[in-house]
Length: 300
Length: 235
Ligand SMILES: Nc1ncnc2c1ncn2[C@@H]1O[C@H](COP(=O)(O)OP(=O)(O)OP(=O)(O)O)[C@@H](O)[C@H]1O
Ligand SMILES: [Mg+2]
Image (cartoon, rainbow over all chains, first blue to last red; front, top):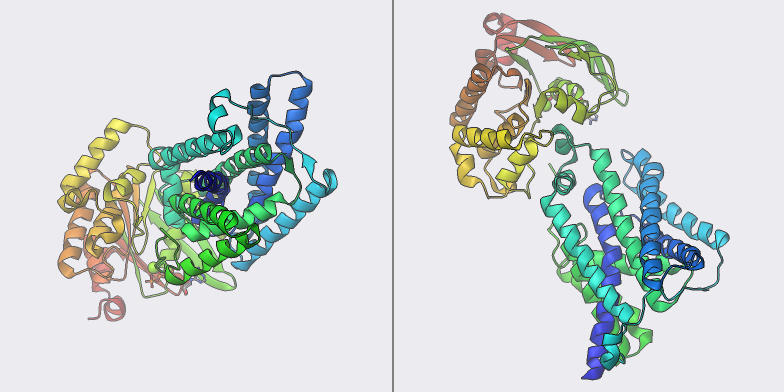
């Protein structure tokens, strides 16, 4: 039972991180029907930025929690700036081009950013500082759950609630929904669609940065390649849930997280990916639009 | 109020509009009629800046519309009901209406205007919480017009409001169009393939063929014109 609980919590941790990344994929897809392959790199850049920022703030002598919060804030700002810029230089000019052009541009961007970080930093794994303190109250259950895991669930939950609120109730959120459903009409009612697209990239990137910092702090090391691996998984989660839907991305992320965790725990970690992708294939065969995706009616 | 001067629009190598000149005065209902592919929708899209690549000039209330974005055009007081209605399918009727007032800040007045439109189209009040995509064609057209009116426009662009609707619904919608024009002094630029109907409600009309204006004048005159009769009125 304890082993089960451990795997369950492990899956929840993975799921939370996948969800934080998957949200960015699904939001961008929902608005401009583009798979932003560079999104995983935004997450990786968030982790690297936090690493650098944390060493500066540590050097300045701030306390552990303060360093964690400040480093995360810097990572969010940095990643958001990257996301915003990538859209402007790599996707916006291609908005009226063939569907494949922005996709290729996205793959190019992804490779460029990986290499850029590899050259600017290093190709080896680097140690990531312990940003999240050990909470005393978890002593009794410390063998199945750590404080960084608790922080990951709580933050992921807060982020998802805040995002739901933003999309449901704010003016920007309504404009995002309108833009996702009908871009021309959104323009005709006075929505600045370019601005909404930028906001979407900024929000998705900021959330990915949070995921990047949290997982780096949890695992304790990073390299330039972590965005690629996590990006593929989060993208899988988004497709599993129904790409374009935020709720679907979160659901897909947890289903994927648990599948991987239980497969690793009860079978072998060698089969983790096999189970994850088999699940994807099975779901897509029986429900091509994903778990909660709307079957996309052709646009007239 | 609105003036198009020598507008030319190209889609790639294809010229969709050639030297189009149209002038609309405040308070008028102006019809633009023509066959499929004549360039009517293109004309409206050029006014709303959805098609940015064009030569010529467009003035609205004395303002040059060159280099303005679609949202700026809306904020100047031009609302556009596009061909095919473009209701946001996954938003409710009231959310669709609310979005029509996207650029307005006067919350209280927005509420009042919404009530006014619910009175004008009681069926929309009944369908308030229903998703836009589930409405019938006629209801969608009413919603599309209402959504455009939520912006409190001075000029309303209507692209084929009669398209695909039963004659009785069309009649109802045209009554409302006249009413909007009279009661709130909203100027209306009406694009229609249903030339007969459009010329009946409008003050003046323009006839377009292959991207060019080939006739213009008072609507009662155009109705009597022999060539127009045979080509567009099916008489
Ligand atoms: N996006 C586009 N790309 C290329 N050509 C286009 C595009 N939109 C319209 N056209 C062409 O421009 C011409 C004018 O089209 P437009 O839609 O303005 O006609 P219309 O008068 O509104 O016709 P209808 O009554 O069928 O709606 C047509 O020949 C059409 O094929
Ligand atoms: Mg048309």
